[in-house]
Image 1 (cartoon, rainbow, N blue to C red):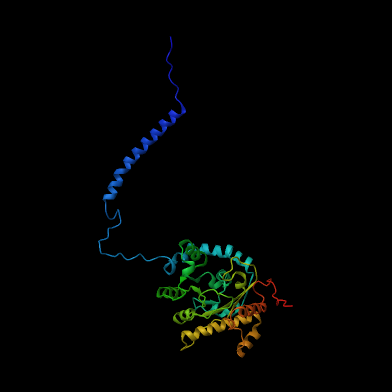
Image 2: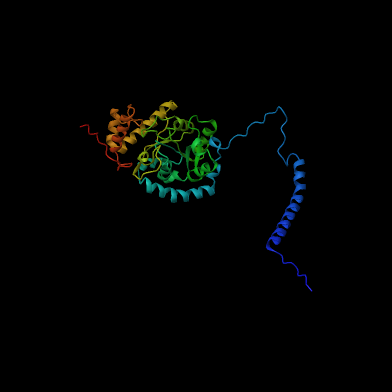
Length: 345
């Protein structure tokens, strides 16, 4: 007589049952969540954004990027501690490796450092490279280095949240509109100078496009006239050859940072004339960097100093003049290939 044996469960049957149980569990969770979701949908403000009546235009929310980027956090105790570590460590190591700077003229600031009645100082260097800011942050003497603010282009350094946060934290950068100085930026800079914060501002407004300098704008002179803060002219030599505008990667070289004597606005001197005086002082330091102290002063008295903006040539003649001018100094990348006239025979 035949016996009926129970059928063995196959692997496919077990998998099907597991899937059915999972589907049932998902339906149960969906049912539990349906009621709270339905209640949330029927609720209005403040659980949901308020409705806008027809015909009413809601003003667009002001952007927090660019010139409106908030950098107050960068001047707090915690951020200042982190920045000291960054400047003393990675920033200084990068500058020493790429630029190998020589700093001169610090003795001209001794009286300024000993004058307790003067708080914030405005440092006004020429500008050829993104390397200028790390170089200035490490080259500015100790009395002002720990309380140094850098005026940075709002449209470049603060166009994204992460980039702006890093610039503010590592360099204590503050956004400045390069085209027109807004009332908000001007008031904030004046407020910082009044609180004994020093400032690095590039009077040219941006990096040199061809290796020569650009005419100075009146931002540094205006702030000095409004706050009474002295302006220290600074000439940076060599950064354009290391990592100038348009270069995809830096090349190691030597740089020189020359500090000049502090300048104050004269009585009755307008902002434009004071700005021209600052530009002449930086031009003098540039001539001193490529020659020596006395030669630079003699050429300035004769009116034969090489202007920061270079000759009035255009095209290849301007570039050739820049090459010849760079050969007179000791800074920058000096291992470039020597140019020769073509052989026309």
